[in-house]
Length: 177
Image: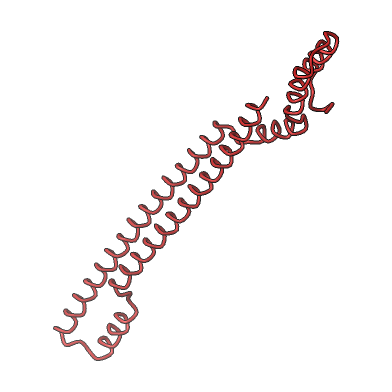
């Protein structure tokens, strides 16, 4: 009872007793004292509110995440361009090899040259395989980014709900006083 009553409530009680208050007024004072929030609970609530993330910090975090997303998209775009350039280079090399082979065949090249060209062709990367691999890599990167982004949104939502829940509890405690 001592930790719940503040000085003004005790003064009211003393004034009522000195004024020979009736029992109804005394019961009202006792109910008010018992309805007070425990000081320890109030201090815990204050420390919890103080530990919450500041809105400015949250805004900085959101901007950082958006910046990372832009960086990720930029890197992905650059990789796509590099990959497209690589595919174009391979296509040009294959075309050049094809022309060289046709020229060599038209000159009735010897058998060892044809074998060398055949082995070279077998070592070259198939452009369709490269395009398929590039598409798979792009899709996987997009899926990873979407998963990461949804996880970040879920974490943010959970934090917001926790803050709202604690704030409503605090408001309920404050409304009782």
